[in-house]
Length: 322
Image 1 (cartoon, rainbow, N blue to C red):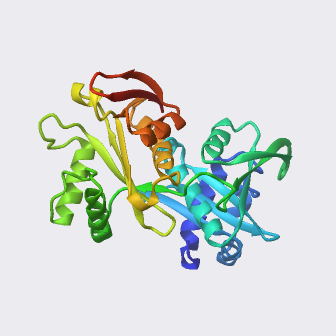
Image 2: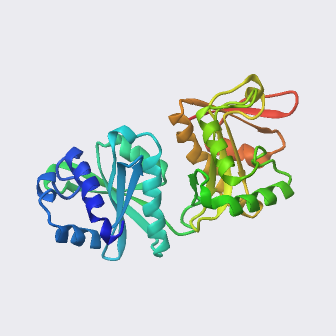
Image 3: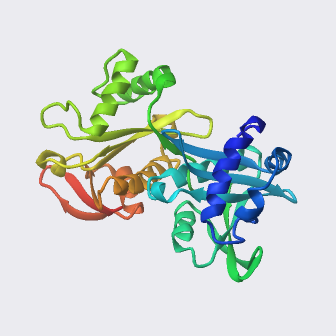
């Protein structure tokens, strides 16, 4: 959010304060609702603030704050109707990218001790409890615990990846990745056909299950990008299975460009894909790979995959709880 966005920041902040437990966000609705434009600008000057919108509705926010040279994740809030949709991952990821881009080595946060959903979210995203705790601001009966995330390479084995849909400006980069993967022997976006706008529309229709080809199923095709915005792989979620997909293909497929393999990217793509599959109603995800594909077998098992069977034609079939 830029300085001119203060009214949008005010709107989402007041939504969060109206719903939140008193004192958790360091202010109260009754106080913040009386602030002047100058006071909102002062608050924004101290924060780097991100807002999530969907169909013009404000569905979430998260902020970054630097205090004594140390960055913190603050003001994380998701609208009740948008929880479980993956928006929280995107917002937290935006703050993580902001902190890392500024050269910080660690990002910390405080979370209410009995807020189990939030603690599970932060743990899944790589934050660990530090052992420190404190009373919540303005409410000493509420305990907050500190969590932190290493940001520098060498302190975390987790690759930095963001999953997203393709957009109008992605054509040239997408085609470059497609050529590189095809040259390496990988099938990637086999349904691609121009023009670009028509292809994006076809992906939207496939995601909604409209005008599918015979034996095709609804699917969500996502790009994996790094912190510089470069596409480094993809994830494909098939919303349901045919007998053919049950044998080979499964619910989830992924690919990584050749020069980014063996860096944890595939594991991170799959780790982030699983909760998205759950949002689509996939409680147990089927995944498959060839028996000689040891790299994929390691990725699947690292994400909790349990081997179901090895078929006579050399396919390992796994189940993963999303």
